[in-house]
Length: 425
Ligand code: CP
Image 1 (cartoon, rainbow, N blue to C red):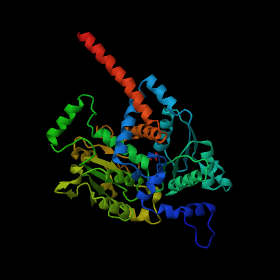
Image 2: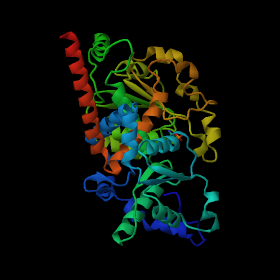
Image 3: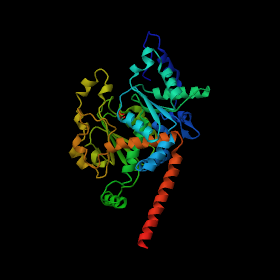
């Protein structure tokens, strides 16, 4: 935890509050998961490790239904009616564009009213109020708290605070972690997985049907299968400090037969961290670390072996004193994508990036944006759908969505079938 008391100074109440949860935080994730659920349903969303492959499939299915329903007026009205009695607090004290806006849009799709605190200098924290008192106040007025903080483990501590309030008969609401320090960004991992699920259905492409596109690809890639299993995933750039990499790699490790390749400088700040490497190896995941797209794995250059590539930016804002000088001695140009590298990738391999990309560093230059494999803008929009699905799941209305979808679309299907058979009769 980053909030340690400074030597020779009495700890602040904020620091004591966080230290209070230290022993619970230090437990293995497996032990914590039951506390984050109620009646076999997610209550607090804190780690990507809370999600099983089945849960990811269910969320993707709900997200697909929401995106289809959102295309019609009747579908929109139905979605809006689901949670119009709920209010959400978006407590984002660390900058955000996509996560904040897509959560807000997701709330709006389901009829949830939103409010926000983004700048703590506008809150009574400036008068000495502790974060936990602030959180407890939010829980008095709202039904859900979605929070981003630069403090690692703050969201997790807040989930325990809510559980303790619940145990003592007080009002308590779900917490969703929208990014906590360098630690976890579980809902980013959800949208990354959703983007990969959609990519590996091979259903995209306006000029060919699903079947023909997949069969066309299989002519060149006979080993290709649908779905996320048995694929090679590359992560490039600032692996060590990327919370999105940590969360996504942890989720991918749950799929059979995956290989994860980390392409990063051999530097303790930027390379794969010991804890993530250990987690992957303990789960039996084939985990490789290379310094360049041209390094060879099983006799093939990495760039040519990938089924999907996850680019990241170098997170300068987390530089410690001396990092900038140290990084100036590393050839970081090797961690930028170029049109030449993209030309060597597999024809179907999606390119993802959590965004923002860094215009000054240029890890993905804009000339790649028109390549059909460039998924990052669609990936960001997918965030809105999968976060809607997550909210529907947390509030237990996902089954209503499935029922409405079935009724609406089976009727539509029958009507069209009847119309088709009438016209051919
Ligand atoms: N990917 C992501 O978390 O973006 P924002 O920082 O803009 O929310």
